[in-house]
Amino acid sequence: MTQKHKFRKSMNRAVGPTVALIAVLAMIGYIIFGPTGLYAWGDYGQSVEKKRVVLTELTKKQTELQNRVNLLDRRRVDPDLADEYVREKLGVMHPDEIQIPLEPDAKP
Image (tube, rainbow, N blue to C red):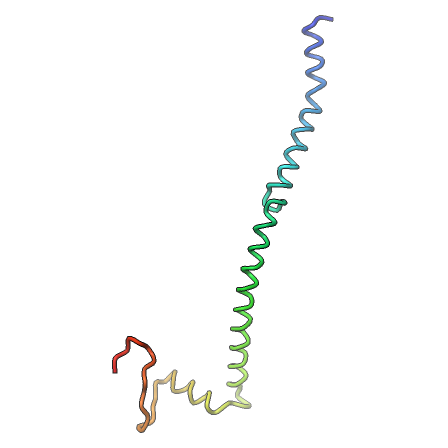
């Protein structure tokens, strides 16, 4: 066998393990740096905390709205809340009432 033939034979034998090694390294890189990899876990922790804060705010808002819905139920309406709601929506006032604007830029 010639030197050239031995070199070609050894190169052919090395192709399979080289491809396998490259594939394994690519998988390891994806496991570490991929979108769901180990490196992304830190971002997930921060993201979860932000979403918990938003969820807490939305839950608070939902309970407030549910309370308002319960107070406006047709079977047991709170008279003060119904009066406030109707006056706000229709813009009606009694003749002896005075309107006090709450906006700082509103002029009397």
